[in-house]
Image 1 (cartoon, rainbow, N blue to C red):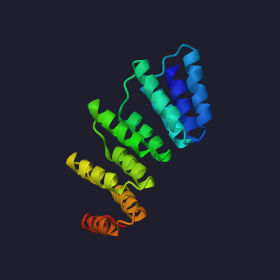
Image 2: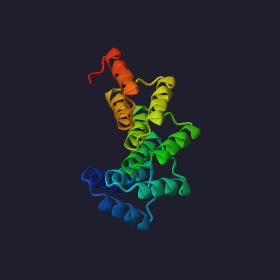
Image 3: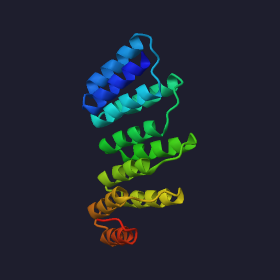
Image 4: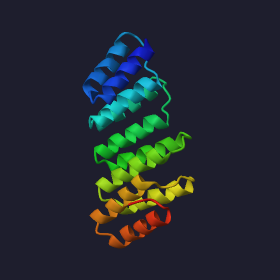
Length: 175
């Protein structure tokens, strides 16, 4: 049944077996079982952990084709796959799409997007995401600020890095 397949796909994902997870996902469809949001999320997370960004994006597109509604977990995993693929534009695009679909990004969403920007030395985008996060009444955590500091460091923006360090101290975040 769908629950058994979804649980097994999730177990493969947690074990770093993205190919087996996708094999189960395809097998599930071949048995005429309709994957649900949990099945898709597990498969997308497996792709994310396996560094398979394009497959994660393809699965997200497949959800829409099969009238399965993505949730915040879906987008968080997809944005994380973009981060691992060093595709900051895709990450920010996914952030915009989820908001268009009336989903609210959470700290995980922003952290993944900021990390994608950090990996590509997009310090201005990382700082803009912190501002957007705060506008959405989300409090930056140690991961958020550390990723933004790293983005500034990679771009030799030491003044902004110092400012972020001051924000960390003021917010009682331990560097």
